[in-house]
Amino acid sequence: MPEFIPFKALIPSKNPEKASAPPYDVLSFEECVNIGKENPNSFVHISRAEVDFPKGSDIYSDKIYEKALENFQKIKDSVPYTRDNAPNFFIYKLKMGEHVQFGIAALASIKDYENNKIKKHEKTRKDKEDDRTRHILKIRSHSGPVLFTYNDDPQIDAIVAKTVSENKPFIDFTAENGVVNTLWRLNDGRIEKLFSKIPAFYVADGHHRAASAARAAKQINASDEKAGSNYFLAAAFPASQMKILPYNRLLKNFNGKNEQEFVDFMKKEFEYICEGVSSPSKNGQIAVFIKNKWLLFSIAKCREKTKSPQENIDVAILQDRILSPFFGIQDPRTDKRIDFVGGIRGTKYLENAVKKEEAATAFSMFPVSVREIMNVSDTDGIMPPKSTWFEPKLRDGLLLDEF
Image (tube, rainbow, N blue to C red; front, side):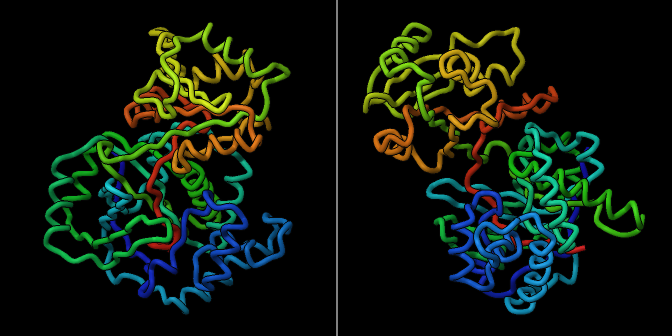
């Protein structure tokens, strides 16, 4: 069973909405620069220190990581950040519109990560791992939590509900994206025992953070067995409360064919349902924007009992039955003819891209379920690339594990 332990967190004591920032890997350079200009205490000066250099600078040069450390030391004093006197768990509430989810932030074990008690579903890229490993080693801190999910436990839920109802939060603010972030300290020994009975955690978002934390721990402990951190920061939310948005696709061209040939292909290969629906209502459906209208198709017949869980996911069927045979896209990770669009942008974004001729056609997908992700992880499988978009997202620089 995986460990999940309390820790002495480093926390912004004033203006947490300004000190913290969106996750480092969801922001463009321009977005980071704009945030940094408006707020010299924003955590983007640490998580993306290249904002303090001219555009085009080598973001992997030593001076970037040195700047991150310099900014970290300054911002800890100017915010200021303070450290808890005793180890705590933290209840982390996220509210986006009508959706609300309650999780618990604490430290997860590197050993559990390596022994697959913390299950993964995504391949990581070496260059991204290298970057975050160097960042962790330089600032000696885990500054953004990995997002976990787990099978619901009513006893954990009851402790969370009781704590929230009887105590005021110590952090409560609405971020620039409209998401309300609320935190309570939780000092209850039952929590650690209850989590120790959870069979496994599942990484929902933050695979590169987790992999980099494991690499950093190995490098530190190789030189000093008593030094460094063998744990990393995570926030675990019960599966029933997780919200996953679709990960949609834009295609730049028709691979030497035309619009009518594509429509004929889709109607021949799949069951045509109707016109005018931009968002599928269930899995096994896919909506296509072409000729200034949405066409809805069923791809459910493409599922086969003999296939692995990851092969039966809608985006995998899209790849195998449409993108590969019609568009000639064999590796969606590297092919420049495809763009991936998080569902948070909505289907109007897809329509506008096609109408502006920035893309030839768009695919609107139904989001995968948490159960599908768990099934893939339990079989040591890998989800198709760009298949999950979790929302709302956790903040960088709100809770830090400094070691």
